[in-house]
Image (cartoon, rainbow, N blue to C red; front, side, top):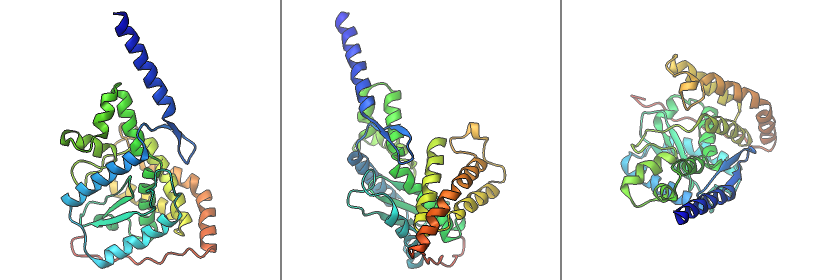
Amino acid sequence: MMGTHLRAQCGSAAMLALLIAACSTTMTGRKQLTLIDDAKMDALGVAAFTDIKQQGKVEKDPAANAYIRCVADPILAVIPKGGAAPKDGNWEVIVFDDSTPNAFALPGGKIGVHTGMLTVATTPGQLAAVIGHEIGHVLLRHGNERMSQTIVAQSTMEAGSIALSQTKPAYRDAVVGGLGVGAQYGVLLPYSRKHESEADVVGQRFMAEAGFDPAEAIKLWQKMAKLSQGQQPPEWMSTHPAHETRIENLQANLPTARDLYRGARARGKRPKCVPPPTRPGN
């Protein structure tokens, strides 16, 4: 009985030490729990992206690919290097032929944009807000944080081995869901309200540094609010912030983002991206 008690105490002490060691700070200054090292997160992201490409239909249209790459490249040029960014600095950007207005980014330098997103983010600046937001999730280690919280909530390191498994199909849904992408292609699982708000603000700064007008992020969410036509659940019932909250946060961050935007334009950063022609059915 005494031995069992001691083992439990040692286990708790080991977990506490692990939690302390795993505390990190985001680029916004917020403390977070990240139990999984970046290399492992990169491997999980690459594996998940491979599955998504196999399940989905990759868009071949040159105009759509050139446009999305035109918007993504200036943002990728200004984001912080190191940390949770891919070690080689290279990001793979894939356009999927899917009418759902979705986009996502995964650890390991993977970005996916659905053609349906272009029907909502109709200007280069609005698309830049979307892509900057999704990259923000990766660089802020939100997937790592969410998976780490799951491990702690289950109170056993066995949960950690499950969350980190790349080879056991039974655990694939949990892993991919933890990265922010649903197990079924095209279904995105929401991050927490805190994560979404943080990615909104960081993404707005990224787009501004790349030379895109940060006010376009506000216009995007004003449009989203209008499109939802009151169908979004109340904020306290949802893991996403209410559209009004997102708009208020982006407006509060706008003066800082405007300064970054003016500096970028003064340095010659003026992306000239032309949206592709709208196709029938889109």
